[in-house]
Length: 227
Image (cartoon, rainbow, N blue to C red; front, side):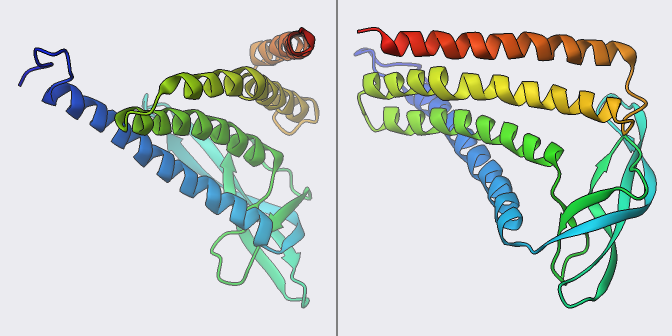
């Protein structure tokens, strides 16, 4: 197969490669969008309850590098709106031991196998995934428009504005919130196994990201105020 013909137009190999990349991007976008949509739907529609951690279970997990670690899953109890007592495991597992007696917010309906824990860590994770979905979706739509012969100058300009005014500052904010949340858990005693060097790194990057975020916001405001 030829890469291009004599007129410089893309040949079968080039078209096939671009089609494969766009197909993979679209597939990943739809899959990630489905996961995020499911979480948002549950967070909005599920009845919320204040549950108390009564115990926890542990299990061994292995990562891609064959390293073993102990994970913990909380068991919570609460009463539904009609007064029915419910004791069930949370859907969230973490490396930190849950604190027995802690009050957490959960979502629940009778046909669920585990309660949906509505924690800040999950919202931060979904927020980061949303930013990733936005970036991948932009390139996927751009690939489709390019294949349809659409003039890309305006679309690229839209992408640059989206990157400068939304994605980049939002990414800095999410990183700051994520590291700040880890520090809060450590100093509250909910993550005592966190190494000192990790605490120092999180603290350093929190300070750097806070200064960078406000400096970048000031730069954008000055740029918009220029004639």
